[in-house]
Image (cartoon, rainbow over all chains, first blue to last red):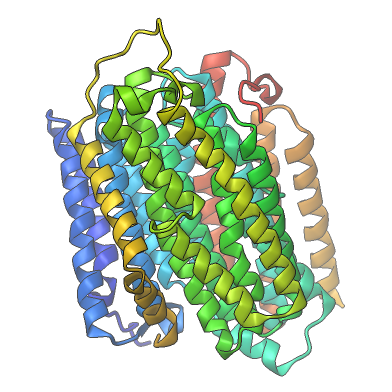
Length: 489
Length: 99
């Protein structure tokens, strides 16, 4: 019996994260100064980025455990994205968790564990690894959603998220077992190989359908979205930011992996499902966002709609040619840009809520006069989400539409038209908040709380706005990332 | 074929679990229904593993069992939290967030 070959360089990001988790847990137990914990966590996350960069400059595809765990450009791009998102989430949550009624040390442990699951997910190429990674991502977030002490709303958020989470996991597992039973394979490559060589029974289509339904829960695609607004509103806002960005991106990476490497050859079984999910998510997400009065709920529906936009290139991937590589690159670019700008929007919401103590959109009235800088940041992120040039969001939309034109089938064109209409609808609610900030009078009679925006939050917002503007003015940089991940990988 | 008995059993168990999750009001019973669904998956995996003569299905089943334990652990913690705040495990009483 040979011991499996383990490439420690390829596993270094995960090893550093595990070490950080252990250190954070021990420091929290033995050291009184609780401010030390988030600092160690941030250093650990940035430290884990170093091997990601060295592996990327190395450029060798590494395969371990019989091809179940692969470190290539595709995996490295998403590992990098997850670690950056984790770092920004740490910046955003530093004061929020420190000043509120929260357990602090455990918060960071759970957050990092979830990030660890995401980095594993980026490399997972086999059903078991995908399942374990997905659960490592979601189980800690169940607890995080219910993190606010003595708050039934937060409890409810956690419970709803948990029930939907385990239900979707069980459904997904049942259908993974069917796929395993039919193909006799665990590895995505072998599943694709089986599909190429055999005609698949109808049961296989059922398995694919329900597996994708399970992932649709994770990425909160309509009609599996109903948990998201409630969970997002009830959970502590930094956790909401993490869920709507990192957790969603984790689900998307799983979806891309399983479709691209596994189900891709049997396009009849997955393409219509993704098409419907994309169209429904965009339309219902945007229409529901229009009538929200709470900013977090609005962003929840907006993130459902953005998820729909991200599904569009996947829905047309089979018709683009070249294994759909340009479509996959489009999803990757959209995912990277979405993650950054949505985190920015949540950071600004947290900063505004510190001043006004309210989550209503009306609390943004007159922000342009009372806190001009904050209003500038918020407008920047919202316009980016709406896709206004020269901010990053327009490029994300551009690559999405380009993949639609590349495929050129009737179904793809209809989906493109739906996406275009939705981009217009989305502009209204993003612009509505901006209008409230710049054109409405500040509410009179309410007492302005004089809590200044903390340094960590400001740093996060400045970092994100630099990226948002830079990626919008010089989109070739982001495009190169997407191409590297798929076209040479 | 013998495989069918296992598949029918697991499909039945899975459906009972889905019904339990959707219809039960007590948080603990919902968690038990989730366990039923995951056990149905394990039966499926092991039956297919015997059919395909590959051991990976059994390994998958081991992972399912382990992670199910972790999942239910977190779930029980959340139900306990709600019980402390509301003095009831009744899930229908939790309806503050509407959307």
